[in-house]
Amino acid sequence: MKKISWRFFVSFSVVLLVFAVLIGLMFTRFNRTNIVGAYRQQLGDLASGVAKRTRQAQNNKEGANFGDYLKALEDFGQMQNIDIWIVANPHTVNRLSEDYTNMDISRVVIPEETESILESAYKGKKKSFSSYDNVYQRTMLHLSAPVRDADGEVIGAVLVAGPMEMQENTIIQYEKYMGICVAVGFVMALAVASFLARQLVRPIIRIKEAALVLASGQYDYKTGIKRRDELGSLAESMDTLSDRLVEAREYQETEEQHRRDFFSNVSHELRTPIAVVKGYADTLTGGYVSDPDKQREYLSRIQRECGSMERLVSDLLILSRMQNPDYEMNMETINVIAVAQDSLRSIRILMREKNLTGSVEYNDACSLIEGDYERIRQVFTILLQNAVKYSYEGTEITVSINREDGVITAAVRDFGSVIPEEEWDSVFQKFYRASNHGANEGSGLGLVVAQNIVLRHGGEIEVTSSEEEGTCFLLKFPETSENFT
Image (cartoon, rainbow, N blue to C red):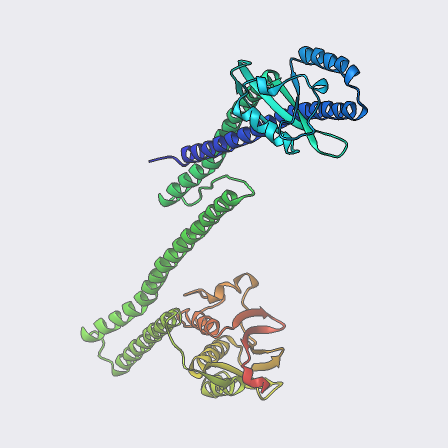
C-alpha cells in the first residue's frame, strides 16, 4: 500500500521539477536574447555610424581625406576584434566610389548567409545573422546596413562581423548559475515538501488511530489535534463523535439500569399482593376458616389485591404504549375545559367520601388544543385521583384553566400532604412514592403515565407544593390554530 505522504512527496517533486526546468529554460532563453540583442544593437549602431559617415564623405567629396577615416576604422576594428567592410552596391550605376570602400566584394568568396544580408542591405534593409564561421573558426555575428546618397539611393553597404565568444561565455556562466540556483531551490523545495507531507499525514494517522480506538469501545479517546484547516475540522468531528458515543454509552447504561430497576420494582410490587392472595387462598382452601364473615373478609381482601395488580398491569401497558414512538393517538380538536369537567364529574363519589369540593375555573371558554380526548382525560383523572387521595377532609380541589400567549395552562391544586421540594422532580419517576405517602395505595406509575401523555402532546408538566399554596400540578399545552380563526 502506497503511503499518502510518499504520493504527495513524489507528486510535489515532479511538479516542482517541471516548473523549475521551465522557469530555467525561460530565463536562459530570455537572457540569451538580451545578451545577443545588446551585442547586435552595438554592432548595428556601429554599422549605422559608419554608413552615415560614409554618406557624408560621399556627399562632401572627401575622397582624399577619407582614407584617414578608413585607417582609423581598421585600427578600431583590430582593437575590438571586429571586421568592418564598406562595399559598393553592384546593382546600381551610381555606386559608392572606391575612395570610400575598403573591400571589393567581387574578389572575395563569402558564405551564402553573408551574401544574403548584403543583398538585404542593397535593398535598404538592415539584416544580421550569427553562426559558426569556418574562416574565423568561431561563432560570429554578421550585420549589414545600407549606405545611401543624398537622394536616398542605396549606393553601398557596411558589413560588420564580430565574434560572439564573450557573449557565449556570458551566457554559459549565466546558465551555470541558473542551474545552480534551480538545483538549490529544488533541494530546498523538496525539504519543504517532505516537511509538508509529514505535517499532512501526521494528523491523518492520529485520526486513523482515534477511529480504531473508538471502534474498540474506548469512546472517551480524543485526537488532540488543534488546527484551523480541513484536517482540524475532521479531527474536531472525530472528537465530537467521541463525545456523542460517550453520551450514548451513558444513556444506554442509564436505560439499562432503568430497565433493571423497572423489573425489580415490578417484581417487588407484584410480590406483595401475590403473597397476600396466595396466603388468603391457602387459608380458605385449607379449611382453616369456617366463619362465613371471616371467609367473606378474606375474599374481599383477595379481590382488593387483585384490583391493585390489575391497575398496576394496566398502568404498565399504558406506559409502554406511550413510550413507543410508533403509537398513534386519536388526535382531534378538544376543549380542555370540557375534559377537565368530565374528569371531575367521574370522581365526585370519591370526593364525597372525604367531604371534598371541586371546581373548574377558566378565563376563556374557547381553550382548544389538538389532542387525544381519552388520553388527556386520563391525565386529569390521575391528577384528580391523587388530589383526592392526599387531600385533607373538607378541603377544596380546583382546576384553573387559562389561555394566554398561545399556551393553554391547567393547574390542578389540592390542600393536603405536602411534597418536599427536593422530591418534586422525583415524583415523575417509575414506582416512586413521596416520603409522606403513608399507607395510601398506589402503583407509583400514575404520574409517569400522565407525564408521558403530556409530552406526547408537545406539552409540559411540573409540580410545586407548600403548606400555604397547597400542591399544584401545572400542565401546559400549545393551543390549536383553530383558536385564531
